Image 1: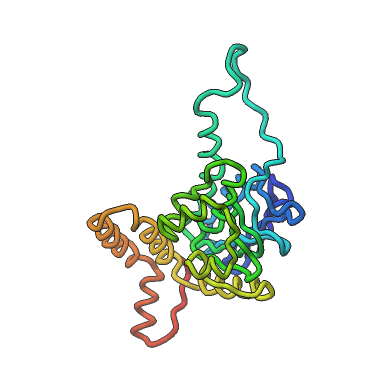
Image 2 (image 1 turned 30 degrees about the vertical axis):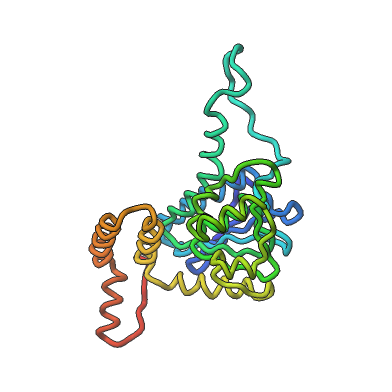
Length: 279
């Protein structure tokens, strides 16, 4: 199946499905691929849809151009028109700001973490603020050697959002996360790779080929087993040992009833390569 999807966000973000891979591309290179609300919400919907789409077995999120993967939210873009309210209501009501965060970038990050298919970030350039957390929410990060990561929030006098504190602390530890948040210095891709934020570091000219190779391998894998491994791993740091062991046992029982599990065992017994269907 090959499909190119139309988007309410127009050409600012595109999706193409081919050979089991959903390619989502941020397409505002002249604006640093900064994310408008429409783009953010569209990506959330596409990633959510990938969980139940049997034509999709892996998602790749990347960006057009060479300078930026995503520089966060488009701060110059206008906000949606406010809902009507009583004449005597204040301009801002308690809860409005938190709701915007929850239903915006947190929803996007959560959707990626909860996706039942593996998600790969292809970081071609600068990943800053929410754009950095967009990449870190993905299961695997492939970065061009020329790229960099920036916890830019401190430079704007604002707190980290887009799930950044939760994500970064788990990936690099408490002290390193504080350093990156407190100073907001550029983190070159090579250093990001050294401290574990990046899985593969490649020249920019090899980024697309590397993404195709990794996505292709995942698209041929046992999709349900990969999804359960993702769920168990993401959950492991948030539960105690007894809960994790219980989750593991239940997951094993469920997976053994899948067609791919039966194929994996049969191929082993018959001494032949496995052919997984994704279900």
